[in-house]
Image (tube, rainbow, N blue to C red; front, side, top):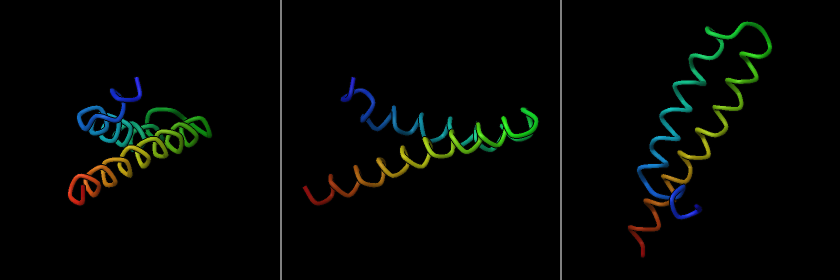
Length: 62
């Protein structure tokens, strides 16, 4: 499972999907639940984006 989640296509999907949901959540869900959803999805998106950047650097050097 770890190998699947660390593949580039899966990371791009996680990054883009969670970014879109994080941007749309405050408009779709009212109140603090929308803000919490946006924050949670934003954190997952940032994590996937960071993994994409680190993966690219490792491939260039190694």
